[in-house]
Image (tube, rainbow, N blue to C red):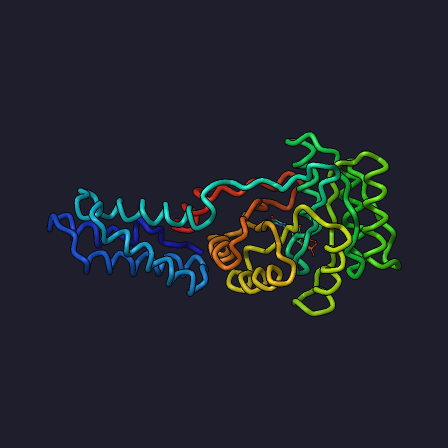
Length: 297
Ligand code: GDP
């Protein structure tokens, strides 16, 4: 699907303004209409768009645009800056524990990319942070998930703690953490169960795991392709578990990534990583300013 970037969208209005030498409130209004369309097309939640347009209009109506020789560019700059700020401004890091092991709990709906991201994160922390990670196979309801995690562990040469699918996940996590401490593995990543939809059983189980594992990081994994749904998912998980960070997967697809903006403004939790391929090295730190450019096109 081809998108029209904001620059292109604003071109017509800018051409008209050039001849006039002065920007009117009406011009700004028209520009904001294009900004609004660009954001909605990028799948940003409509409530988030409404608030954003209100904030940016206030700034854009200020003096700098009026004095500027290239008001269109100026508006784009303001929009870009505000978008970047809204997404946190700077890159965020994993919360590390003062006393090892650091415990990271992966949560999310089935198919979002939780198991894959658990492996990717283990690899990234070993590579760039010199950590000794371990994975815990806590997704006992999707039988293939345990095998999948074990395969990933073998491939990366990272230990996977598993007790099959007959034990309670609480037991698996408790034993896994004990194993990590005994073997001086300083970073434990717990893969948890997902469901197709959020339900009470799942949330209760995740709450129990949280209580036992006392994670430094509760990383919500969300599929960027799910667009508007991603916002509801993030909101529910955050309400129930008080997540600490988000990984947005499948950004190698043709989505504009509007979910990043919506999730951040609805949960006020930082997006920390993005998934950019199915391969194990396809995890990158989240850069708000890059995402702002992508969303605007
Ligand atoms: P889980 O059910 O949440 O554990 O999801 P999985 O980890 O099994 O991932 C579901 C599918 O999404 C798998 O086919 C993964 O290879 C794929 N996947 C995960 N992350 C990404 C990503 O960043 N990009 C792409 N293209 N595929 C991904």
